[in-house]
Image 1 (spheres, rainbow, N blue to C red):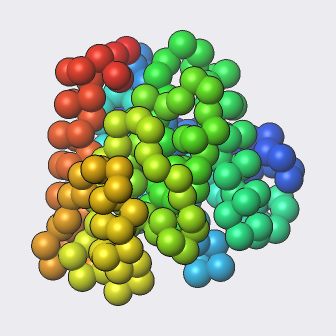
Image 2 (cartoon, rainbow, N blue to C red):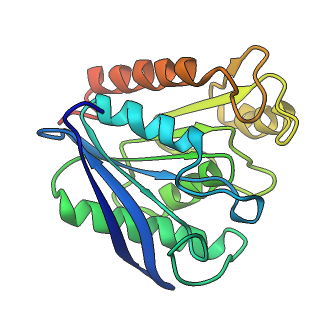
Length: 213
C-alpha cells in the first residue's frame, strides 16, 4: 500500500459507532468495503484474510474500508447472528460512498463476512459493481444468489465451510467458484495467490467497464 494514507475512524452505525480503518491510495478510482469473519470465533477487521484483500484492492487504486462489526473492538452494540451485521455493512458502504462520491463500490468479505457482503449486496440500490467472496459460508448464513460480477474463492480442503456447501449454492446460479488446491479455510500460505486472483478479477471487471473509474 505504498503512498496510501491510512485513517482510523469511528463510523456511524445502526447500533452505535463502528470502529474502522480506511486506506486511500492517491487519486482512488473506486471504493470497497471489506467485511471480517465470524465475531464469536475471534473475527476482526485485523484478520489476515480481509487485510490481504484490502491491501490488494488499495494497490489497484481502490479506497478500502475495513470495519469491526457491532460488538467487536470499539464498535458498539452486540453480535446479531448476521442480521444486524448486514445493517453494519450497509452503513459502512453508505458512509464510504458519501466520503468518496461518484466512485463505483465493491463489497468484499471473508467467511462470515463474505456471506454478510452478499446479503448487503442484494439490498443496495444501485447494486455494487462487484463482489469478492473468500471462504464464504452460504449455508451457515443463508445467502441469496449473486446478482453482480463476483469472485468466489474457496479452499479445496476447507474444514470449516465444506467446499460442497459453496458448490451447492453456486451451481443453480451457474456461478464460477475458484478452488485453491490444498488450501484450508484460512488460506495459510496462499494469500499471495488469493491476492493474484483478486487482481485478475478486478482487472477483468475494469476491462468490461463495470469498475470504470
